[in-house]
Structure formats: structure tokens, C-alpha cells
Length: 352
Image (cartoon, rainbow, N blue to C red; front, side):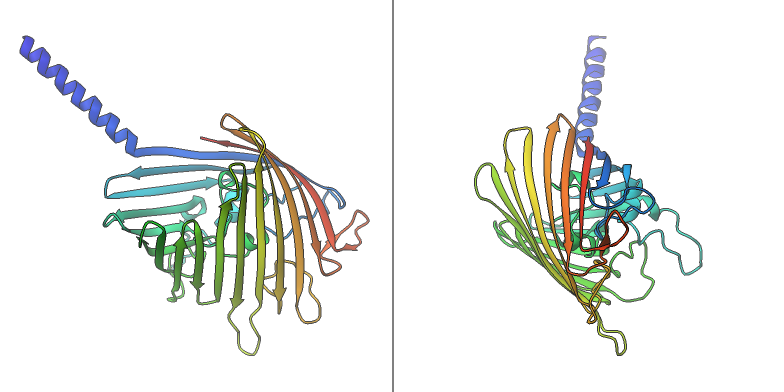
């Protein structure tokens, strides 16, 4: 009887230990965000306008998104299923759902932000296949990973997501390389054109040079940052994108640079600035909206953001000023053409 009891206890302990080890590999995380937005020198009613960048553009009290990320991390293999619900999520996955060749609507894509599996082939090589967020740029879709709540023009008009196969290679302790082949950018569910995009990333100590050759455009991007002191950080993003020529029409292009200085004044509060200069030629990508006779325009945007952390909740008050080169890019309170727009955002982000 004693032997039976001992064996039972050992068996039960083994099961609990195995379950505990297994639970450590599977995780659920995510975030919920909402915000208030108001123009300072433009209407806030049915005529309300916003900068041409993505997200945080709705007037008054508005919703961001609910984000649920389920992942499994094994010794050799794993997966990530990243689901989004709400206006920010809908804007982020605008390429889905698509329509299949059989004209049957694919209903799964309208909540999938990322969905991929990976294989650690060796200590230095990982293969990933599926839908993953872009490797270009300083900012990302999730508000938990951005310091500023509103997003930059560089982020908004670069790619959001890719579907394909990529290899991440650790060349040394400091150098890394990523190579990938993917569907057309933001065509996340299937390949409707038969064309493919090719991407590469060379990394060195937290600085990244990215290249994406898509059937419709080519983009070169630099993303990096430096800890100038224990409390002061400077992030950098610069990019150039050229759309492919169509017939006799030259493809538009854009170029820009953004700096992200951030100062931690305490363990709970950080203040940061985003200064961005963004220019378009030959109509660019339609980011600025109003152009001169050559189809050129530029905008300088300054965003001042505070970040207060209260346990898992982050409060972000934000002031933003967009100043464009062309009159009529924005409008004032009298609905007259204007070159500038000031706005205020107060965001609440809960992460788990």
C-alpha cells in the first residue's frame, strides 16, 4: 500500500511538473487601447480632419484595438498567432480579407495581424514562414511598442506586413542578416499576382539597414538608436521609396527622416519628441494630399509625448504640429485652406 501510494504521488508530481514546464512555453499576451483626440486650430465636428499618417485619427473619444497574441516557444520550433480587433487593427490589416481566385471571400484574414511558425535550424539560423509584420521602420502596429501614440508618415506609407519565408542568421555576436521572399507587400492571405518581393536586412549592434524590392516599389530604410546616457535615448529612422513607373507615367517617390529623443525623468515617467521631415515627388504615395505643379510636397511634423506608467497601464498625453509646404493640405476653423494643423491626443494603453 505504501509502495502504491508512493508511486501515485510520484506519478502525480511528474504530471504536474510536465504541465508546469509545458505552460512556461505557451503564453498569451496583448493590449487594449483607447484615446481622445482634438484639433487645436481646425474643426472637431463632422468637418474634423487629421494628419495623413495612420491610426489615432478619429475625433473625440475613440477606440484603438484589442490585441491578443498567443505563442508557443519550443526548443526547436514554435508559432505566433497575433489577432487584432477594432479600428486600429482594421487599418493595420487593410490588405485582408482578400478575395480568392474562386471568388469565395476569405473571412479569416480580417483579424489576423501575424500568423507564422518558425524552426530554429541551429543556434545561428531560424526559418520563419507565414504572415509577419514588416522588418522596415522604427515604428510598429502595436501601440505598446511605440513611444509616440500617433504614428509617423514614414511608418504609415511604408509596408505593414508580409507573407512569405524568411531566414534570420546570426553572423556573429554583433552582426545579423535576414533574407526573405514574400508575396506582394500587404497581400497577406495568398498570392493573387504571381509576383514576389525580396527583402534583406543587415544588422550591427542594434542598427539595421533594410532593403525591400517589391513588384510595385523599392524601399531602402535605416533604423537604429543609441543610449546617449542611462536616461537619454535617441532613435533614428530614414527611408527612401520609389514606386515603379507605369507606362509613360513616372512612379512617385518619398523620402524622409525622423529623430526620436527620449528622456526618462523617473522610473514611471518619460518624455519624448518625434521630429520628422517627409517629402514626396511626382505625387509620391498620396501622403500629404496637396502638391505643387510638379507633384511635389513636404511636411514637417513635431510630436511631443509624455508616457506615465501605472502598473500595466500607460497614459500618453501628446501634442502634435504638422506643417506642410502647400496651402490646402489642412484647413482652419473657418474651413479655409491652411498649411498647418495642431492636435492633442490623450491615450490609455493596457498591456498584459
